[in-house]
Length: 125
Image 1 (cartoon, rainbow, N blue to C red):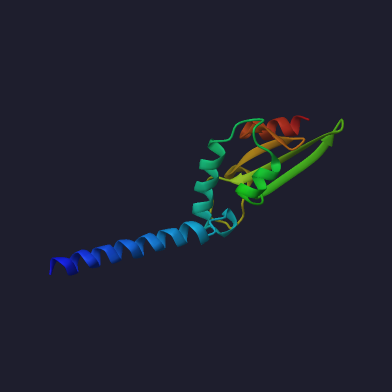
Image 2: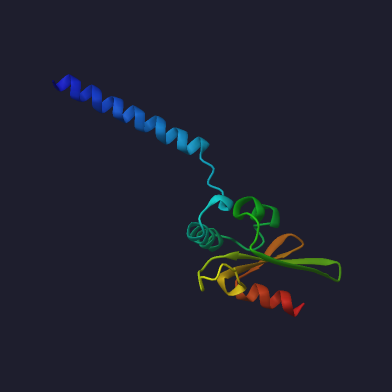
């Protein structure tokens, strides 16, 4: 009887290992496919780890997905783009607003400011 129990435990562990390997290799956990609550949490955690001048706009699109709101302009041949990613829920109205987002300011494609100061810098240009 002990051999049967051990064999069943080993089979269960092997099946679990295969399941974990399949999930890790094939599950696409992109922000675009997340529920809004999960996406907000993901965006908060990801943005909290960002370092200025060590992150670019293309990486933002790849890792955070399309911004919820974006504005851009060119001033004196320098391009500025502020992208808003939803990070907190304010009102259940089906519309994402700036107060529900964290702003990322990209200057010539490089991250130069995060948060409320990012949008203030953008509008002051």
